[in-house]
Amino acid sequence: MIDEFDEFSDNGALGMPEFATPEKGGRFLDAAARGVARFLDEFGTWTFQTRERKS
Image 1 (cartoon, helix red, strand yellow):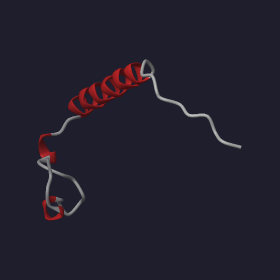
Image 2 (cartoon, rainbow, N blue to C red):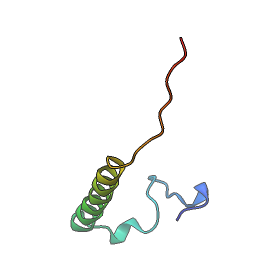
Image 3 (cartoon, rainbow, N blue to C red):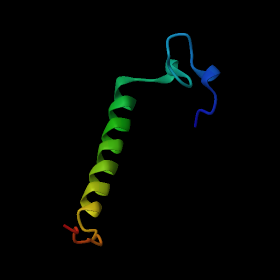
Image 4 (cartoon, one colour):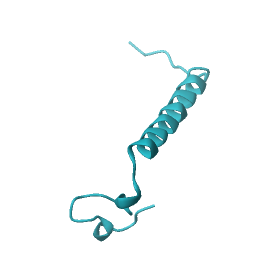
């Protein structure tokens, strides 16, 4: 995890962008999307306490 803003490169990249590839980016994006989808599926099963509004 990046803790300091001085760790950004001149072009705004984080870490070691020279090791990045489109395939790695695609795998990262796919994994992130699956994680979000899993969360949303689970969130849809949650029950919430509700209150009636007073008039």
